[in-house]
Image (cartoon, rainbow, N blue to C red; front, side, top):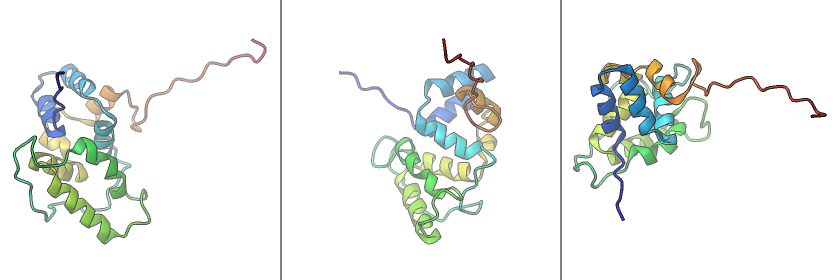
Length: 160
């Protein structure tokens, strides 16, 4: 049985960065689309989403294990990102959130940890050329509000 390799988010965004056209960039995001990638990119690009941490460097110890070895994956960890969004988790204390964030960063491969910090700072478009909110929205069928574009429901008569 052949196991398919799932690239790290940092590897996916590197491919998007190297793609020559907007169409290719959109196709790559669609090819690797997962709920986790969508959540991550929404948190990185949606201007209405604010993180509970200040912008800038984060004091953590990078995990220098080789890719694919002893580290967690952003595709799994992204399920916990909601805790770090303003207004989403009003129970956990800020100090606990900071500790959880440091632990998450230290568990991830260094490239994904850097990616997460740049997402927090809304800087992915500066790191990955051509990765813009327009490309992300087009890839996932989102409107300006980072929601799936919905079409008005057709009126159906009750008597058929």
